[in-house]
Image (cartoon, rainbow, N blue to C red; front, side):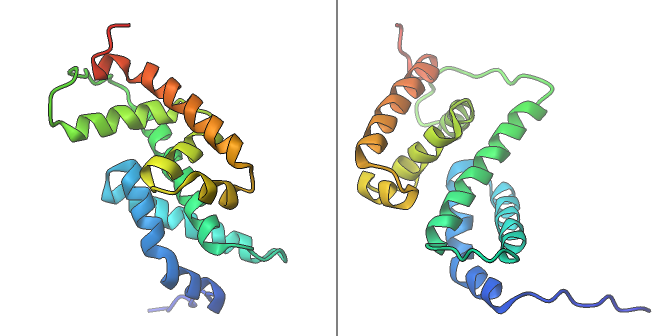
Length: 168
């Protein structure tokens, strides 16, 4: 039996994984609502980080980078799940207490947003970060964050209107 050579994992990458794998998994799980998808996101994020470690530019804020990468990869999973579906599921409008259905409806609505808007909304309402924290992480103004949050909420309200029982 021939042993395959071990893959050398840089110490810095291993340290980053040990320090932040929980954060990446939790972020992905909150968005996808599914442990298997969250595991896929975890792998994707750290594979991207492996590819990135060969570059000379160091990450300024590792935690922010990994959180943003998890949000984006989780949204990619939701989008691909929507495009892979061959049979449309029939949504039952607004049953009280059906959190899974609401999560799926929100996931579909988020997947229709522009990536930056989805990222800001996720950081604000799923990750629970404040507007100033989001502005700092993304390197944008607090005003831009607030405007994006407002517009995104309006767009999601329209997308989820039938689910939420809006007659307008």
